[in-house]
Structures are given as C-alpha cells and as structure tokens.
Length: 39
Image (cartoon, rainbow, N blue to C red; front, side, top):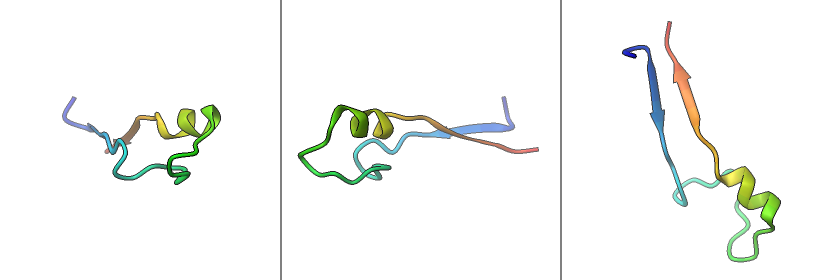
C-alpha cells in the first residue's frame, strides 16, 4: 500500500475540455481514476 497513490482531479483537470456542452462519451472520459505505481 505504500507503493501506490491515487489523486482525483474532478472538474479541475478534465481529460476532454468540452465546457458545458459535453456528450455522454466525453463525460465518461472525464470520469476516470488514475494511479501511479512506484517500484
């Protein structure tokens, strides 16, 4: 557990910057979890 970290960005750093007119597919791309695994 000390080798993995996670960070949520929410609306601060969207993967797809579509503003107020996002499609459901764009929303799905922005709803993500990214993890950094350290050796």
